[in-house]
Amino acid sequence: MLDRPSVVRPPHATRLIVLVGCLSAFGPLSIDMYLPGFPRIEHAFHTSQPPVQLTLTACIVGLALGQIVAGPLSDARGRRGPLMAGLGLYGLASLLCAIAPSVWLLVVLRLGQGLAGAVGLVIANALVRDAWGGLGAARVFSLTLLVRSAAPIVAPVIGGAVLSFTSWRGIFVVLAATGFALLGAVALLLPETHPHERRRPGGVRDTTRTFRRLLRTRAFMGYAASQGFVFGTMFAYIAGSPFVLEKIYGLSPGEFSLAFAVNAGGIMATGQLNGFLVGRVGARRLLRVGLALSAAGTLGLLTVVVTGAPGLWLFLPPLFVTAAAMGLIIPNAAALALQDEGTVAGSASALIGVLQYAPAALAAPLVGIAGVSAYPMAIIMAVLSCTAGLLFVTLAPWKHRRTPELAHA
Image 1 (cartoon, rainbow, N blue to C red):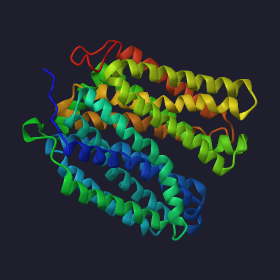
Image 2: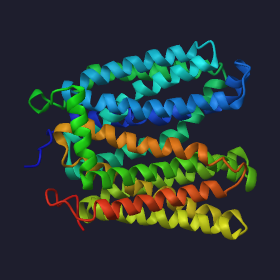
Image 3: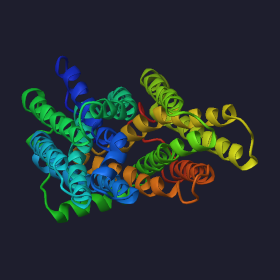
Image 4: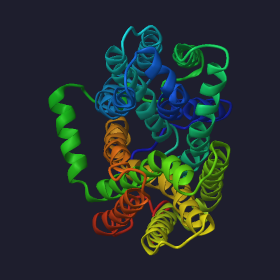
């Protein structure tokens, strides 16, 4: 028998959606806010570019690994306690980043910041599964996608504004204040969504058993892995597009920001369209459309690059299609993957998170292996998006019998 999620009614529903949206922004804020400060960090520590970039990689690795611990812990202890602990540690780690005396210590502290920030990411997904499930979860994931899509645009702008009146260290002070503010909001406003009767005993053995079962569950892996590879596609785009659009196509930083904002707007638009259509069309069908659009967009982008077709206006449309497809993929893949995992929603969310950030961590550095060239970015994006579609077709080819509302063929 399928788990029945908790029933959340206004004003708690609205309050929970806002909190989940804020928690979902942890990854983009931690990754993107300090990017404008890279040259200043390099200058402050009298170092080169690679060690500074390693601080970014360390945070991504922390965001991936931290979810492995936070997810099972929240299944055993409830959501509030681990979430508050993670937010407190995130604020502390951010303050320590602000006073780091060397770039190598900053790398270590960024790893810790990512580990703590991962708690917010994984528990945000678990909260949605606890409170809604099914169609409700798909709709709420579509709403929170607004925040996830806007955060990568807003975060560097905030970082640049902070740099206008203080040093790069001030950015980490802002991140610390964000963590502590969310800690207060959770303490005052968040009800426990995972009651005692639904909790599972903790321990390494139980966690390992749960992960093994999830890894052997074809449908879960089909949805989670396809989402992860598409997420890697977007990180390849994020890491490679500044060099390609500015150095090859000659866009100014302002023009690049505009192009980036248009693509993010496409994600936000399709995410909201998904929330409107999911009850009518079904999450599985919309996911299939999103994966097809992603593959078509990246293959179109690769064609433009390989054929050497001139003009920015041939390059940008397939890039927009690829980005916009995310709005149909992320919320539906997450809802479908979590639909039958109510008692282990934290562990399942953790595994989804690892499958998201692992391809991203690999894709980001690879896009620059050929220097200033569009080939690596286009090839990696096409391979990842087509692999996502293949995983969906082979691992999750049938609709789920237990939740037909989500899984229209």
